[in-house]
Image 1 (cartoon, one colour):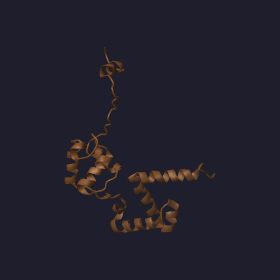
Image 2 (cartoon, rainbow, N blue to C red):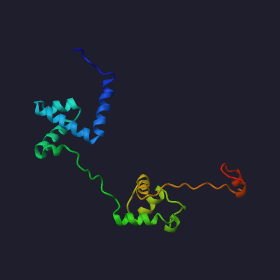
Image 3 (cartoon, one colour):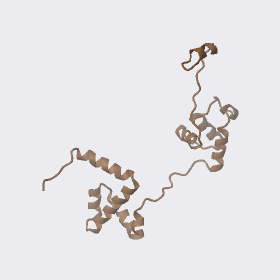
Image 4 (cartoon, one colour):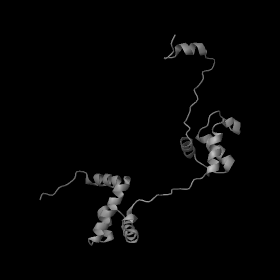
Length: 168
């Protein structure tokens, strides 16, 4: 039989490994293949090299399989990092976002990530980054609003007539 090859194999290998890691079902199947190879007599080191995983990872699969059976190979829930604000604090953030920053003793008339970060640090002593605060906006159902610039000494009637969608 003629030997087959794949063009740009190193890039294809990386892409395939990323695809396996992206999908929970394919990660499960990947572990099954690893266990099958070990059951057929390959060492954890050989399987790791073949599948592109660390030998320690293959050893973990084997231990989990021996302890829990096939269920040990399934993806479990991952708790992630604990929240920095508790439920009561989140409710307070939600309530304060419905008022203006000026009412809370801050400068500005609209909330943004930087302003919310400053308020949370003052109120709760918790240091959240601007990005985390922007995520809180989305999580609480708020969206970013940018103030429209006002031109000094502009005539509102002339601006209205100039607008593209204005009907006379």
